[in-house]
Length: 424
Image 1 (tube, helix red, strand yellow):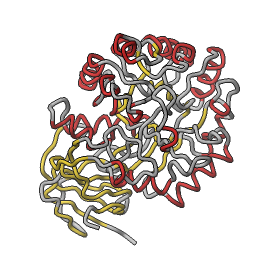
Image 2 (tube, one colour; image 1 turned 180 degrees about the horizontal axis):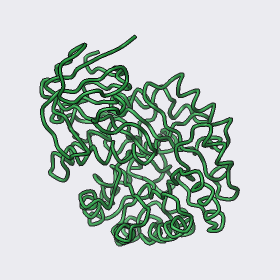
Image 3 (cartoon, one colour; image 1 turned 90 degrees about the vertical axis):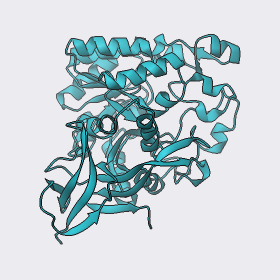
């Protein structure tokens, strides 16, 4: 059945032109057909609320198979829809890891059965993400992988990494790398410095991130692959990114919303919800990251949604599991940065929608004719206090608990279908 909808009186957020203006948008079936054209079909009056491309969240951990008690496709997609996320780019470090076509087929079929939002799966570049034996990348691409990664682990053996990158480059899919030197970061739960010493926490130097970044970027250039450094968090690494980009190197970089909001001072009460991977950095590093969003050194902002159960977090800080959930808080946290003057709305959606979509070659992330009608309508000015127990993810490990954020998602659409309505 043909479906036509026109959104009128919408504050259109355009991450391509970096402009926003009140206008109309028409979708026909699952595609955006016209911007500011004649009104057709069903009319939705946005009442000057924002209409933007749906968020494409990079690095989401769905705990199927293996740890469904932490997160399932159903619970994750509910949280995503509530948070304005229309696509989840998932990581493969499940139990077992998504390292063969059969498991990837299972993963994709489960997502079709249970998920309201798009699931764009990455696949493991080495078996079990252990960095030793390269996977059958061609078969994984044929089964639907949009990129390759070793999850939250770096590949220790440089020869294995180069061979894996060369194989992936021949398939023209990107590699998403997590930058940390295995030996320097092993057992660390904080960043080296006066603060970590005062807290008595095992720490790793910031150089751990830069050393791995330098090596991975160099080998990526040799192989000719598009390399995306998924979580850049230090000024040292930003200098490397800027230098490589100035030379035309095929590299992009991202960071997590948590590293743009919080810093190492937030862990002074040893609250394990602030234990992340990589660990929180200094206040200076956080400010440099915020500036890097503006100067295009950082291309993507993501939640890196990593559910952990209560038993994994209710431990001494150095023993607790790393990670935080973020599907419902990514957009509101970004809107807090907009409200505080660090970003504009179009720049925010360039980082959370347009650029992640480009990375995995998805036909979404922008308000342009011919693109998928994956949309979010929201009021950016509504304040609320986060209550972790009200979040829809199965796990509740958020550092934003009892934190004031801004923004209320009113409606979320995937392929023109309304998957969330705040009035329901």
